[in-house]
Image: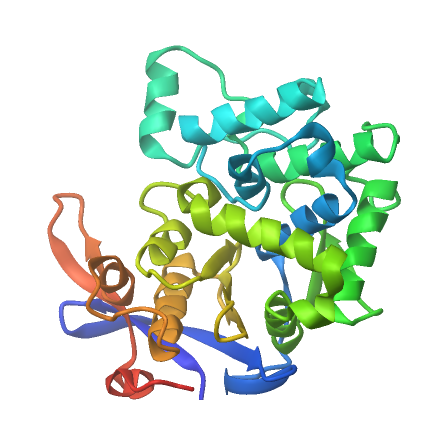
Length: 336
């Protein structure tokens, strides 16, 4: 049964979002699924921890002494707050590069206050504000580490992308990964939800990863868990859901309704896709799954905010909610 997220206006159901989800553990076995576990999706920004880990494994991060904060930003889909742009700028300085070397493009920061402050100060936006600027700094570091020209580092045939592709094939135990082009111009991969959940599960299996890959994954986990605000930002679901638990937990969003989670102590990987690409539904669905997996308390304010997300009109009045359907909620009973 798929997860349904109702959008209400008063007591009336105005819209319904449908989500498919898979949890994998126990040496790659499906522990739980809703909808079609073999549904194909682009991974989008949920891929970033793997792209970052590939750079770490190659020695690129150590060679320029990126900090834990900077490693967290390599995995981020950030909203362009000053904490994010300052960190990205620090990474460029360590690489002896400039914003002209970025190939991610430019977009306005998604953080409203930052956007307004830029306008009021008559300042221009730059690639530093791009939500993928940390990821691209990691790719630039990899290009420099292997002694290759940084220009064209986003092209599929550039050695940087070949190293990343090989790393993802290794960790996912798949040789048949198809790619598309992401919003930031770098290659992005598509796979089944089960395959994506398995890749997330694989990040918990240090014995299978081996020492070198395992160390790269540990560095990623530390950065994300120690600096959740760098991974997304104030008010964002990724950051807040990780901040809502004392247990080790990695949560990462991707565009078009994709979400993943890694539960290191339980050795579980989760992948989720809302079929119509809705972010509001994906945030509600991933919060629900993490409650049902025993990782989050359904009464925590940051969790309630996602499970029963209020919809407000232009006057600030609550007119409805986004919430998972009661049938799937099943009184909050644990899935596993």
